[in-house]
Figure 1 (cartoon, helix red, strand yellow):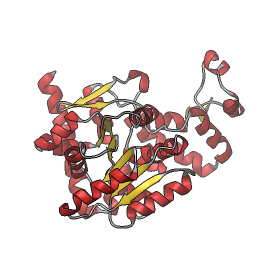
Figure 2: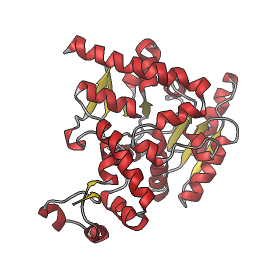
Figure 3: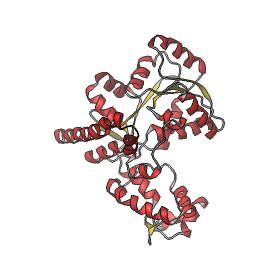
Figure 4: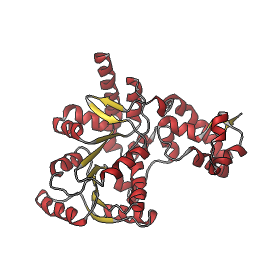
Length: 330
């Protein structure tokens, strides 16, 4: 054993390693691995074999030191694994699907083939704080077909309730993977929201990354309410099977819920500010910060005037409310 290296395997696991994973046998197993670190915090979207491959071919002294440093907070914040996760996380009466990224994408793709509407919401502590006092938003979350967990705050709240989060199925990480599946299965997307030109820039970037991706149309999110009928007509005329609305919560989710019966698009997803990330307008936190559950600090440093209340006041308030809920029901 060494400090760094692939996770040790049982004889049964070792015998089942596929050809693409054989590189792990060229390295001594380690106490700390990138896969174990990401798995613990819920961001292990790549397979264990892919991360072992990256470790072998990209290993460096600086990278090893960084991995060891990240292992400390990762161990404190991490969980035991998806096998321990309940199928649902519940906060303030809202059921959140405790699933994996791949399972969530499979569910979304399956819903594009149905005639009925499916609304999907992502929730972080800020969203749940809003729902705590905003009855209309709470109703939307309760009626949505799928609610997905977003962020380290949900992970910590799950630990408080004794129900660990399986994976951090946030919209920003889901979007490129959904685009790749949509491209492979010829499912057209419509991007609605953000500032003028941002949705188009995000669409162009994803089409370059996912050849064959069909973007049925884009429209910014700053349209006048009097233009709503025209926007709905444009979306319906596009033939899109998935509508991604980036207007910020709760506005995007309320808007989708209000107009879902007027829309022909079977899958409706509120995606927050992710178009800004994929258009290049806003840089995302580096992977090492995401591995230790500190992406929120990156967002705070980028926009302290707008984000300080959400993170420095909202996150502790949310965890207190969860703790209080446990005390009152337990």
